[in-house]
Image 1 (tube, rainbow, N blue to C red):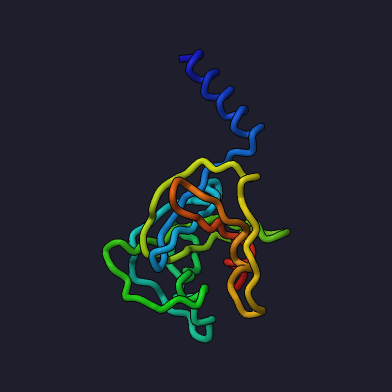
Image 2: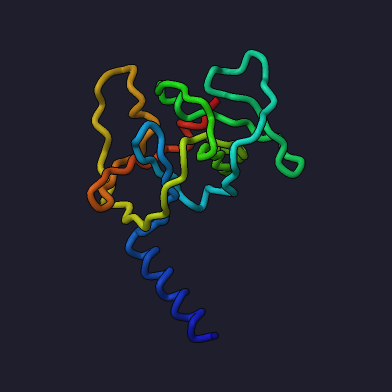
Amino acid sequence: MSALLSELNSNLTLEEEQGVRQFLTFIMAEEEYGVDILTVKEIRSWEEITVIPNAPNYVQGVINIRGTIVPILDLRLRFGLPKIEYGALTVVIVIKVDLGQKTKIMGMAVDAVSDVYSIIEKNAKMVPTFSDSDNSEFVAGLVNVGEKMVALLDLKKTMDI
């Protein structure tokens, strides 16, 4: 048992030295996005929420998770994608976002969870800027995973409400 723990710790250290981080990926509008798995607190199925008046259109409302009021953002609306009806695959990814002096717990409503990938950070490419009104500010980088491209989100900018 001790040898196994030592091996796991040495592998983790090797991954850290190489800049490898794990990302939870999810699907929206047939595109794959990723967030650092260390920011993910839990993944929940869609449930009814309490609507908050005068909130931005992408803030769907709030839910109560073990006594904590958690705002839920619809990332489709945040990114300017068409709204869809929530269904059996719709999930809420609850994340912890460090915003300078404070930390917020927030939820992201997404179409479906996809996978977890180990990604070498230095392999991420910059996002080209197309116009002043595009949503590239929400993407920290793009990485190739096999035959597909995954957009890694900048949670500070994405979740800033």
